Length: 342
Ligand code: 5GP
Image (cartoon, rainbow, N blue to C red; front, side):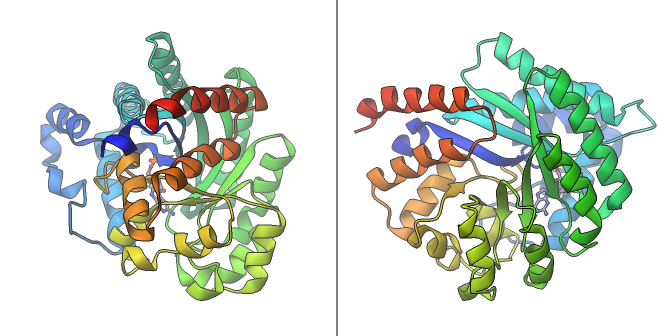
């Protein structure tokens, strides 16, 4: 584990409320004993699997525990520090702005609070560069999607570069991306980067084809795009033509049962093509993992040397949404850290 923990890493696909650790969950459960929520309801342990539907039920439970500004601040601060402790040097967190009438949490104060946590960690000298992607939950339809983009736009301008893009996520079996196109186009036109969950389930090929026309700047999962996974060469061509990096989350896909076992993960096909892929955790709390473990898992499953793993972490720097100067700083950091690793 040592090599993988010390390896400097980039995390680009992490949902805030899916990333809550056991320790933080303990604090949340203590704050709200009346909810009668137990750990087993908020995480999927070793060897356990759930359907994707069941995974989405888990998020609903976590949202009950994280419903005040104070909760969001604690969760975001803890998650950032945990990624840093795992050797992550650059993190893009994503989260869906949520309104909770009972506690006065608004979508705006939600985003403000995440930004506050990022700034707090920076002021404390935590060794990690953090950006924020505002998430659109596809279940909430076109109007909310447009409002979310407007909110992100506002914060992109006021947050000093901390809000860099939009994520499209939420239950892939609900709604159709076609209705979300105007919001996504608007985001793109105002300079927000786009990371879209595409083809997470087999039935989304037509939607993926449509959304790839934008084109997105990165793809989350893209599990069923490749012909070997039931997709098509046409879709692969669209992805490769625009050189769109894929964010791949091994444990999440196996525990969420969209992939039968690690060796059948679509990492294999894209990696063999030399296409940019970035290993990510998705929901480190819910799926009981961390990024070091994901790198180790990919290495053992696909027989990657330390050199190959190093290259994988280094190439992830090219896929970040922050400005070129940040990429240059990170590349410098990787160059400095390399000799200590080999
Ligand atoms: P939050 O946005 O509240 O910080 O994080 C939880 C939310 O992220 C979920 O409600 C869901 O919308 C999204 N999410 C987390 N994991 C996944 C995933 O594996 N697939 C999809 N499509 N969405 C996810």
